[in-house]
Length: 155
Image (tube, rainbow, N blue to C red):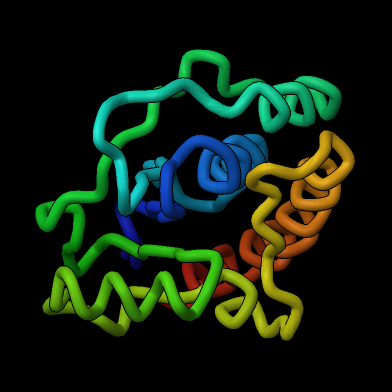
């Protein structure tokens, strides 16, 4: 039986780190079908992906050019939805603001995969900073894929 139906990457604005993580994970092989998306904690109106984030994705054979930022909603929390943030502070904000019933499904990506290295937020940085963020995400998501596939095998 499938453990999760959905995985949501949550960032502040859903215009860079979240969409990059979404694109990377969507390009990977998972044993079970999983709806993968990204959402933002502070989304006042839909915005496209940051141009530097898109440029880095394109240089790695991916794209999110059709992506528009989407706010995280209370309805997004469910017993079959795994929610990943990129920092402990953001995770704590979600716990405080949404008081999710299934808090055990709310994780910080690097900790979930057993890494001490947090994801650098490239906001306001150079193209190289976005490239570094992509590389960090790629390494963490490779571990995430292994973990998700192992969890499915144990279900």
